[in-house]
Length: 76
Picture 1: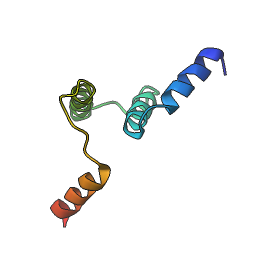
Picture 2: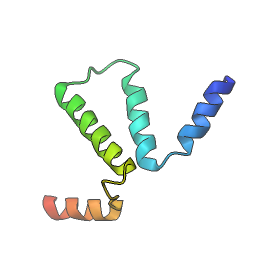
Picture 3: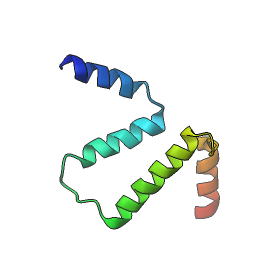
Picture 4: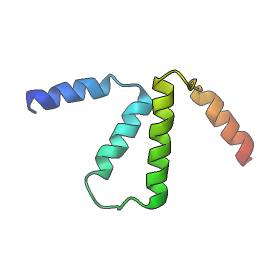
């Protein structure tokens, strides 16, 4: 790898799990294959909006345990 790729990798691996997952999805999407639908694009825009709110301090984080517990209550 080149020095710049090493630096990018180091920075990316230092991100929180959610940010790494988002970045991984964006990178994989950039490789082609599936074409992003309007619905996919809307979800990406929503995720980016929420992340910007979180970074600005306007949105509080929710622990994954709470998110999954709520999903379990809704589903079943």
